[in-house]
Length: 328
Image (cartoon, rainbow, N blue to C red; front, side, top):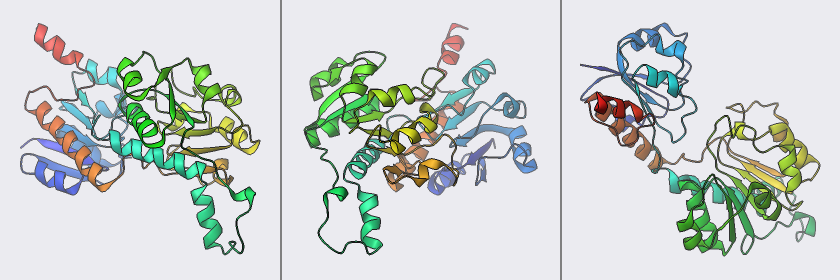
């Protein structure tokens, strides 16, 4: 029976299902390179399934029989794709299944920051609500405002749908290429990055992490936003300059921010962003619902089984492997 390593965020139901076909070894966390039992399992494993394990050259050197790595995530910056491809190891992810769940979380951050919901929740719980609210406690409207979406992939489109249809918002977007269908459906306007930053009441960052997007939003970009702008990051923490965000919020260069991701995760308790009232901070929960957790694990398992049985998985990242095999 082939051996499969499962780790962080593979649902128990899916692990039990996989165990009917494979020898499944489960690890609770993802920092295993110094764990002798993990290294031993790596030496025999044909497949790996889980969330955010850093699959590096060092790790792959310990896994001579590995044929597939199945990420339980749409992002895959934890995978060394070039190294995997060089070794003819399939890499897969789980796009699509989490689109609506993440879009819901982004809308939650938009509402929470604009209406100052966490701040006012604490206001009530701390016994400070002793008279009618004063202007200093008021938030700002979301409806009929302008949202600027940076990165119009599947999740960006789902956010545009919610903003347009649910809140009558004007939608601007910046993307590597135009999305005419999105423009037609949601009356969205394709802009350059500067225009999105300058014109939007809410700026939503939804790009994947890459060398081109790392720290793409920093001091210069925050200075281009309206002083009343609210910035939302639902992508990756490294896509922004956290120090610049802190200064922008502290100095009221922008009004507020909502972030679901940090440069270092879990976030360090000394991170200065945590000292501010005008930021909503979440522990990377964009895709984290019970329903979606099962859906992502199930899709990742389907990708894994396809790869191990010689078929092309639905969600291959390094699809050039199959093109090479077809030519040969």
